[in-house]
Length: 231
Image (cartoon, rainbow, N blue to C red; front, side):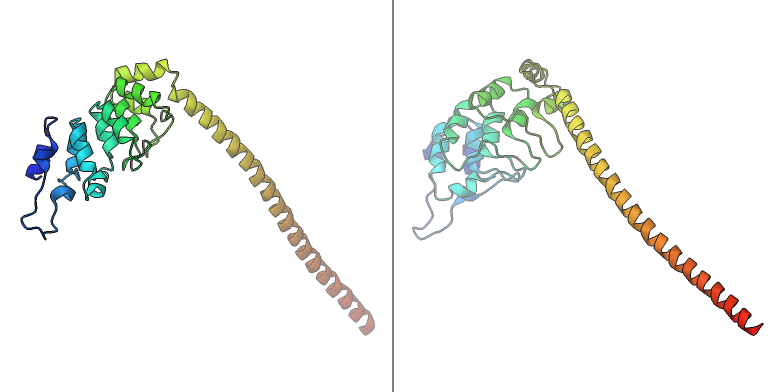
């Protein structure tokens, strides 16, 4: 982590604190694209601290694309803004087309999943006000936000989601019923296919038996005729 990263770790920092002047006019080096060991740029720290002025300044830098990229865990700047309850920064970032509110991290979790895990009911309420339905999105492990809230013992988040009528048990029952119906239909189709195959095999077997029996009868007739001629 550079000194400029540390400067972005406070909400009191201004753009003047992170202005970089190259040692020579022709120097191409810029520290704005540098990341710490977790893949966090200076912009991640500015968003995490709720510094709108500094965030806007960093977004206008030539290396903004490198700073906007998610960290090594796949968490975007929106994840950081929501995790720190900086709702004003969520609204601010969504003004830029580079940010996708439905972005998922490496574990398939949206900002709604993280809000539910951290028991951030105000954050969840703010997301719902934005009109984006992320309550029914499952992460890479198949967990809904309410399930992660229960796993992390986020009591207020669970109570809030249950009040909204979110019940993953009911959804799971519906999914199981749909899967059972699909499986039964597939099973009926498989059984019909199996019967057709068995009928085809039986027909071939009957043909083989008929040919063998015909050959045996022919041999018997030929032998009887030969014996009659000799006698």
